[in-house]
Length: 143
Image (cartoon, rainbow, N blue to C red; front, side, top):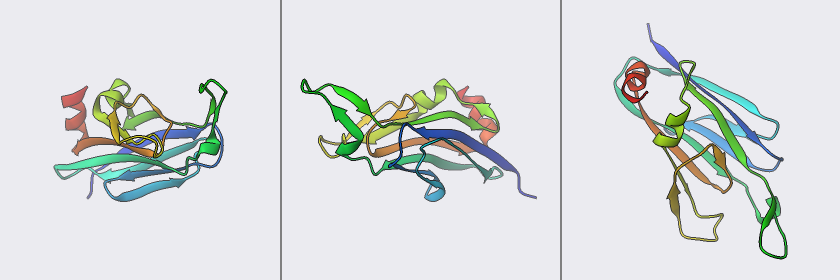
């Protein structure tokens, strides 16, 4: 009998037109336009000691999604929020910020950067969080 762990989160965008992919390693769990919000979850085999990566990949953002005034200030922008990331129904909270890396190039306008992730994706790019199974051991070591 396989022991599974549940990984879940809620994703949402301010407006339509973006594409978000949620993956574990190279396996797509959910892909689509997150406008209006979407609960995402999957069960992962928790029996083996293994390294995994939870990945959020944003694409489709264009200049049309951002409004800039005459002074160069952003007056309106479409972003994606990723909230309530949970392992086995335990919300990770601050661990998401501590354990993730947000890699993007400001939608092609700057060199590639790696930043902390605070729950919002505003540029096409990738958020990655490494974790190990069994998940209960990872939770014990990191919480």
